[in-house]
Length: 88
Image (cartoon, rainbow, N blue to C red; front, side, top):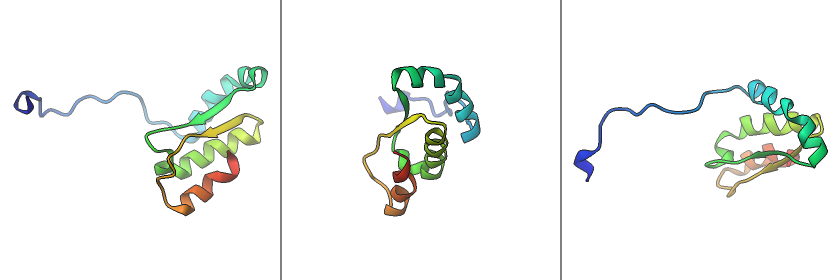
């Protein structure tokens, strides 16, 4: 019943991180990626909504030899797709 829903803002979960902070976490598990042929998957929501952020993580992961995957519906501008395409 909509009338019974609280109008208070609910506390969110998770935390805001920079691409560098995400890479620090990824690098902690690099040995597992190398020995399992695993890697980093960027997904969403829609990952292309944050194409610059995704590009930075994908680019840095590729640079240090970690496999990358981008899960997307391609619901974004073509120039956003072009930003990430070289790194997947």
